[in-house]
Amino acid sequence: MPGLVGLWVDAARPASWRGHALAERPVKIGAIGVRLSRWVSMHGFALNVSPDLSLFRSIVPCGVTTYGVCSMQSLGAAVPDVSDLAALAWIQLAGRLGRGASTFLDASEVPDAELGRWLMSAGRASRVA
Image (tube, rainbow, N blue to C red; front, side, top):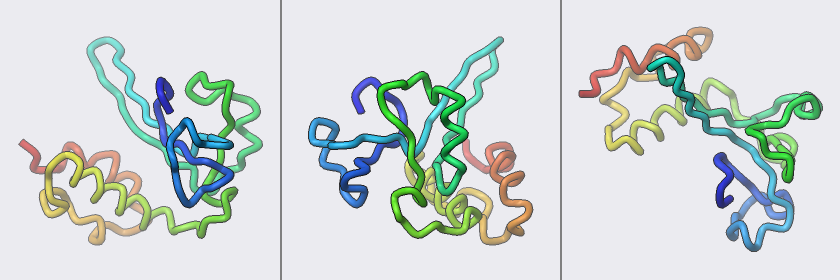
């Protein structure tokens, strides 16, 4: 969506995005954030897999009041295992950064209970120049 950072989907046709101009019911399914404060950068992203969407009534996600939020579950998609999805996201990020997944620690070697902590520290443990 022009001027609106994040991952968007057309709730009327969740299987295909035909562009913002043709979207009948655009809703936000993911967020991307960057913050700079006192010479420290923080960044991350979120993908709404199956959260309690009623909690979004209490906040204004990313300052966007025009459109609502959704989740994979609310769109009727199969809800993947979060640890599998996190590992896939890590591999995709590595690819987008022009690095092979083998450049980084192998997510399959990390126990599910440790995956979140591993992803948080993986940037420090990677061999990226």
